[in-house]
Length: 394
Image (cartoon, rainbow, N blue to C red; front, side, top):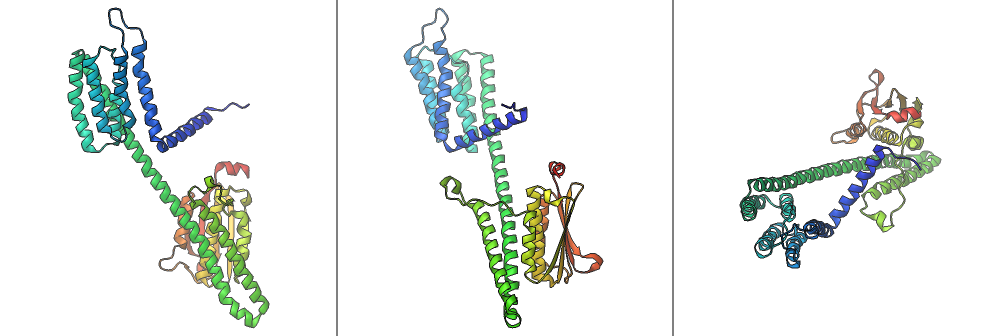
């Protein structure tokens, strides 16, 4: 049995805390009941500890009133201000009607002030602050008339209010980050969908346009063109199913999700290039520096960049040859796609080259485009950093 280091322990604690937080968000009523029981346990302590000689023993009536001050906490989220008033009324009744043990801390008051600071609107928070500025000094005057108690009571109530506001700010920050993460995920899925559909449709159009010519001139080539259209369509449907699987909400829990395939990576490049060759382009492919051993994430980004660059060539370049080069050295994967076509392939409103730059940036790299060597054709160049652990593995 292995010994986990501090990092593993911290990860376990964070995981358990996150699961508890999610469960609490899904079961607020159970959380509120639990808090009420915890406060009740704390307020029971003075009743079970023997009282000083000369003091009357605690009564069940006093304990019952103590419970009455705690019970409203079960509804603290639904009507926090009403709960505060109920607690204050029950606490006042306890002071004037029974002779019971005091409490080291005003537990119920602190919990409800924290809740109001966390959940209530600004005007309700302001009204609560004004009410507590009156109620706390009155309570101290009825109890000990001590400046020390007054100072301590004001301090703990202010601290409860501040903690509530800090928790509200923390939750808002988490919500903003979650929204940003969702926006990034939507943008990523949009790029994937664009790459898949743009590539497939472009190849289908090229093959479909060449089909009638091939039927008249070389029937055997027409058959190959139709087979390429069919294969391109099937491949696009497979990848679209994978992407749509990411968008299903709760399908895994229902047990009806289809198994998800991994995103295509560099191992799938030869098949991609073969489909592009079927459109009539002469495509060459060279690699340097242990490219096949790169991590899956790097390979997936490189695959999509090559796919989009080739899609632009097919759609716009009127090229005859394309060269795809991948080189891994010094912790960087260099992806280069060069054609002998007529220059920039992204027309007005096109998203292809923009998508290439966004994809490279999402992996921590960069991408540039421009004329090929000697000013002829067009070239896409992307630099993708390779994790250091992956370099050791190569």
